Length: 365
Ligand SMILES: Nc1ncnc2c1ncn2[C@@H]1O[C@H](COP(=O)(O)OP(=O)(O)OP(=O)(O)O)[C@@H](O)[C@H]1O
Ligand SMILES: [Mg+2]
Image (tube, rainbow, N blue to C red; front, side):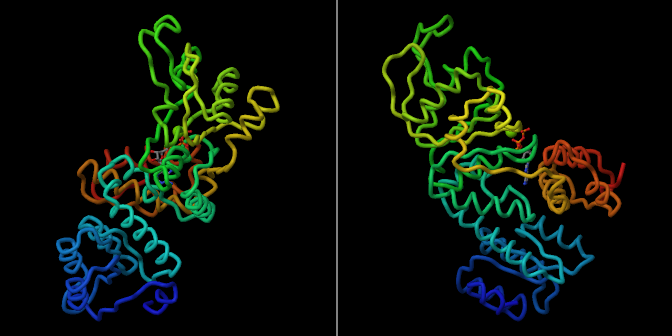
């Protein structure tokens, strides 16, 4: 395993047992620890406990034998970053190492460490191992150095907002505002002034000057959720804003320069709307510089066990409950379910299960 990792470009320090590993960790900082559970001298759990005191920022990945998932759960509760079941699949190992290292690079960044929102929004929250999603991660990574507009499509609950945040917080915009706007949630008469601002007295109710969301987001990202619900007249204004990089607040005559990236999301087919004359084609081109399509959960069933465990960990921690597992029968029915509400529905089901669970296993009910 050591030489395989070296061939991937990692510097590997081998330790014969837990004590030797502990000695290395005292001597020099390491970026990641990969540890067996059963070891002579100092076993994996004892090592983990010491590492948590010595270097709590260092991610520890525990390797446990198949059938000892309980140990894995214990390790996670003690602060392990992740676990691998033996026999270890090398692809799986690489993926988990990469994810752990990406995460610790992020936590090393003070600015982000202090920004809980950013913390919640970076990649480690986007759980997936399916090839379609990994390709999307790769695309997001490529976007990290540019401020191109992005269009996200996908059914409800597939993670569009999560991806929008990942694009923002993984990129050069991360220190600037991320401003989410639900276009469907603003009365159409107010959209223009909400987005671009207004001057006092420009309409009944405009009692003072107001800065629009685009100006609030200056330098960063505006996330236009449900872009399909923008009325055509506002679509025209938005197009002009994107072309001229200027906003003119309602009732004002002075344009103001802005520099924002737009990430738009839609769960309806915008091409079809264009064909029906309900969405401006030129605006679609502007938004659609990069197009990411999120798969439904049914298209990536292989992620269901992973997401299930992710949400179990999340909710047991949140509710301060003991770790629980899932019976094989329950997992089978989770995998075969249709999931029309996609990841959000799965998340809700697990949340409910954790609230009502009796004993330490989630069963079919
Ligand atoms: N791959 C994932 N890993 C972990 N959590 C996820 C993943 N995808 C989605 N979620 C979670 O599922 C929920 C729904 O995701 P999100 O709000 O991003 O979906 P959406 O596509 O914007 O849905 P809608 O169209 O209904 O607004 C969120 O709580 C999000 O954190
Ligand atoms: Mg959404």
